[in-house]
Figure (tube, rainbow, N blue to C red):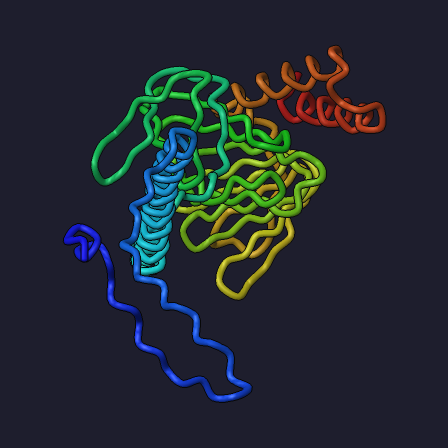
Length: 310
């Protein structure tokens, strides 16, 4: 036998008996080692792109999550602090409303249209000099010097004139409801038609006038002179009506007729008459008065001139 041939010759595979009807078994394929796949150049960019996309998506998720958390924090803070802030603001508003100063009601006033000599508004604290064209207010007390004369234009057209050494409080200056308290001295009042009430209180005596002209002097006794229409004088429970051209003296039973020298002997009344005549004549000339009142004004001037002796 050839030695080389003997080395290459494999022994024959053993024979297995084959059952009838069964196919011959196939030879087993020997296992093969897995082959590592190398990514192709065309697949590499797509993979990188997917990796970058995943990173971007993660950033977006984080950003959205952060925004949501921040919004939740803001909403929570608003819900927590809103009642407290509202409460503080309400307290501040309430405090401001409570501490606001209460405005005093607007007071009525009168204007000084004439001043001769010295006069003042007086109070417990001081005396303030008066001047022409200044306003005096409801509640003020006016005092005149020994040789003084003052004229006040009241709202609604009425006139109040004060003589020397006179002290009067302006109790009420409503144009339709005027009231004064006279402590001393002399005053002359012209009451415009349409005034509901015009009161002068002098001690225990009260004078109520409507659409008239009269004077009040208060010294030891009260003396009331009526120059137009009439007034009602009340002292205690007694009430007396004093007619035009009459005079009432405290302590007497009935009014007396005005004497011929009632005005001519009184410097204050002479001045008051002259000023009244000039004032009313100027109103008629300038047509300040309405036509239906012109006759009344003219009758008033005539009455003053007759009483004054002109």
